[in-house]
Structures are given as C-alpha cells and as structure tokens.
Image (cartoon, rainbow, N blue to C red; front, top):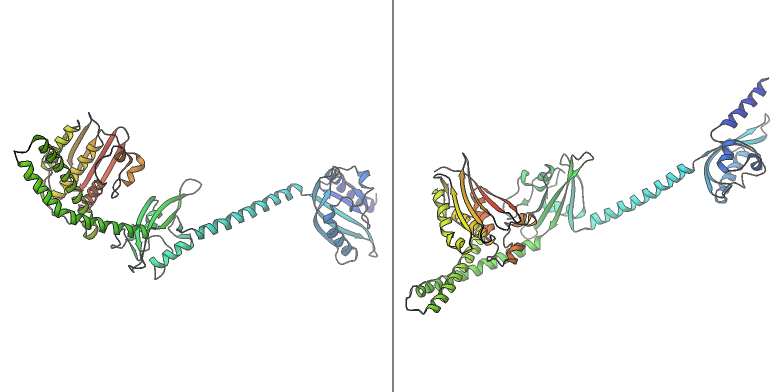
Length: 493
C-alpha cells in the first residue's frame, strides 16, 4: 500500500470514528460525505444526507452568515472559518452546532471541497442561554436593589469583620457629613460630632454603634444625636444585625439609622409641658392635703363623711406621688440626678420598706417577706434607694394575685450590693422586657388590669440605680413570676 492509500485509509478511519460530526461539502453546498456522528446528530441516514445540501439543513436565520463566510473562503480572503449556527433535525427541532470549515485546494490552487467539523453544543447553548437569562435577572435585581437602597429614607451601612465600611447608601452619606464634618476614615468606632441620647455627652469609641456592631453585638433603637449645631443636628435611632459567613462565623454587620429628630423634639416638648404642669400642681396639692389632714383629724364628722374624706385623702396622696414622679423625671432630664450619699443601714432600709407596704399586701392578700442579710452599711443615697425598693414592691403588688408572695432580699459580696424583689405574680411577656424602663410605658397587663400609675416607676428605679453606678436585671416568666435585681457597687463608709 503506497503512502497516498495509507493516508486515505487513515482519513476514512478518523472520519468514521470521530466523536464529532464531520462532512465533506462541495462548492455548491452538496453534502458529499457525512460521518456517523453527524448523521446521529441530525437524525438522518447517510444516504439521505448525501442527497441534500447544507443549505437545506441550516436554520434559515443563520444561513446568510454561513454563506458569506463560505464565499470569502472560496474567494481566497480566508483559508477557513468558524461559526456557531443552528441545524434542522430530521424531526424538526433545532440543533446548535459549533462549525469549523476549511477549504481543500488542488496543487494549482483550485477549490476541491470543504472539510467541515461540527460539534453538538445544544446543551451548552441552552446552559449559556439560561446563564444569560439568570445574569440579566440578577442584574435587574441588583439595579432594583440599588435603587431601593439609595431611595429609602433610612441610613444603611455594611461593615466587614474587621470593622471596615463596605458600602453605605445616599441617606447615610448625608448623616456622615453631619456627624464627621472633617471626614471619615471608613473604620468602625471613629468618633466625631456624635452624642448620646441626652445630646450632651459625646460618645466614646466603645460607645459608637459601629464599634459595638463590629464586636458582634446586636441591638435596637440606640438613640443618639449627630452634629454640633443645635439647630441642624439630627437625632437617630440605630439598629444592628450581625452578618454570618457560610460556616456561621462572624462576617460583619449591617446597621440601620432612622431619623427620629421630630419624635425626640416632640418628647422634649412633652417633658417640658409635664414638668411645668407638675410644678404648678405641687403647690395647690400641698394645700389640699393639708386641709384634708385637718378634716381627717376631726372627730365630729359623720361616719359617711369621714369615709369620703379618707377616700379623697388617699387619692390626693396618689396624685402627690405621681407629681413627685413627674418632677423626678424632669430633674433627671434637665440636670441629672444628684445623690446625697451617707452611711445607710440597708438591712433596716429593706425592713422599713417591707413594713410600710404590709397593709397594701394584706389588702391584696399577698404575703410580703424581707430576707435581709446581717447588717449591711454602705454609702448610698438612702432616700433615693428607699424609693427604688418602694417602687419595686409597689410594682410587684400590682401584678400579684391573691395567695401569692413577694420576697425582698438583700445580699452583699466583697464589692457588690444585691437587692432583689421576687414575686409569684403573672409575669412579663418577653416582648415587653426591652421596654420596661421606658418612661410612660405601660404593658398590656397594666392596661387589662387597669393598674394605677403613669408608667414612670421602673424608669425612676433605673435612673436612681444608674446614678449609683449600678444596673437593674430582670428575670420573668409568664404565669410564674418576676425577679428584679438591683446591683450596686459596694462603697464602704
């Protein structure tokens, strides 16, 4: 067998066993030879394909581009070409093919026939189509999210695990310009014209919401003021949520800043009004109580009238307590709470508070007990701390049913005072725990039971405890009861 015959045999074997479609095509498009892979690709027997042209099996919309390249190749403008086009299967459906074409010429340069290789890329084309659709949808959603992100009236910022700012929206950039007039380095915790909820004390690095969030803390409604100008400054309510990676680890945090300036200023107006009214009420109320005491001391009053005087006096005393609470709140707001510390026997203070509340406990059929440790003397504001214990006992009585119990305990460690009021009352809904110490907040049970009070008692407790450098902890379970713990740093006399 000569070399030409060997080459022809090798070509036939290659063509016949090739996993991709191969054809020999005449200059007019007639299919001279088609291998098995191409026949299977289009569903035709070879003898049928050899009676057809490639124009007949090409999808009409793709034919012009193929013919143009073929003409360029025949004209010698190119030696080969490659194109992706659609073929028409024997059953009518379309098959995508990646077509590579080369022109075989004779020794004198005359065209002999085209050699074509066709790779079936139908599955790949469908994948690419779906990928393109998904990419378009993703791009649309991204543009939509960006539009919403920049149009919402809430400042939004995302920080990474190192505390570096990743992105922020238009509204937050406005807040940043007010809070950091000299510029911002893009790192969590940078201080600036950022103040606490009182609008007076600047926040330290550790108090900045971004720093707290960068440490993995989550929180809601942290209020602060930004800006040095009292006219243009804004009040913000900040919330933070952690962002987790695929393994559940800390990957950063998202923070939302809501402008609550109008709300905060309305609160200031309300506080000023309440304080003004309270001051105006105190003087005439003192006179009323004085005259009621004189009436109550008279022995010549008819029994029914004496009872009415006692009812009036009892309600006037309640009103005096309410006015006192309002004035306390106004004092804390205006100038902070000033303590008059002295050496106080806390065991005696707890016992006296319990004894004073026993008549109310008996009327409510609730057992009230004191569980105080040995003599504990500490430097505290005795009057204010007594107010704390009184308020906690009063609060426990409001939400305890007959047959229940309230225990007031006192313990001291080396550096901590622990005063706890534990009741077996109705308990507190978990959803209300975060708002317990908010001024004027009254929970659902307070409204259902029509409990007396303006929602100031626990707020006052917290302000007094914080002024002592302490904190209040609450543990509660609905239907079981509640426990309020006052934890104060122990200061020896």
